[in-house]
Image (cartoon, rainbow, N blue to C red; front, top):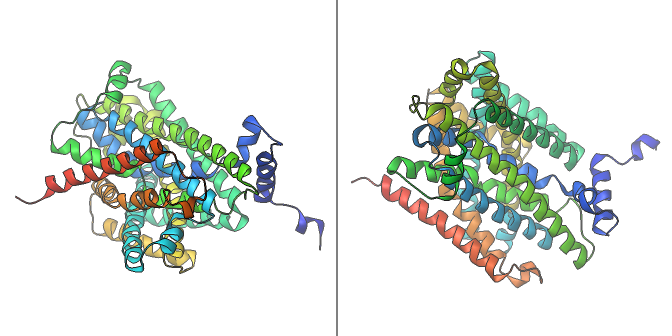
Length: 428
């Protein structure tokens, strides 16, 4: 066997560095770096095209008023991603697999079907978002942009065959592009910082439309598939060899969640602020992504408009990859069925192709998909809340009582918002 054939690949080297860090041989930033990846991958779900759609509509119609919803949703996301990672680290199984192992079979089937609906709604938002970016930037029909999106996503997914690290670095690069684009936007069109900070902490709603958008923001920010995926990514990455290493791994994971989702939250708040600054006074009717681009172009120039669409394209492509990875986890861990990646991708493509082919408004489809996600969101949240409390699952690593109360309150809040939405939508 040649020396090249036995050389550790990037994933192997990352795992080795992680083992050294868990043993205390690397500390500080050097110790954290091998563990940066899973939360960054999950964070792309919080900057997907569904966020673009709901945040643009929120800012254009209501100014800065719904920033508190974005902040609250991001805090909930941090909590549940941290709990999901903790569950995977301690148990060695994904959330979906633990549901299959601990819940009654009929309930597992119902949860799996609901989660598949969420996966399809997710893929609809992500694929259409990337297709809009390609369509507008390169002046192509939306359906052509959609097919190009599928081809690029498939090419990116092929990097999974090289271990966990290459795909993590690719997604990290996309996160960097999105973040840089919104830094440019804030520099070109600074928000009213007084209004920004006030509405970030003072809850307000103004009529049924704001309620629908608030629920959509929660659905776009706290993503069911990201909760499933995060636990799965922690099971076969760096394996702790003792309880002390497991505790250290949990601390590293919590630090990564805090960093990755703080960045995602700032990007989401920047989206709302940009829409509030540019569209609320004089262009409040801007509710579509394409319209936002064409309105930005004459108002702020090609740099601002180009940064906006580039960030959307990066968001759509990367989140399509993450969505497909999550779909694989949902299928194989809930019902123990493995299907080829190409078949999984083909199944989740169908709703997006149908929506585009029949001419449904793309941005409206994005917002509706986020409401669907919010309605499905309690499924993984409640499952995680139940499992994280079980001693036979957590084996001495159960969360504290205050953390349990916070998680229960967050779940209750999502259920309340969904109930308000259903009552509002119920025919008179």
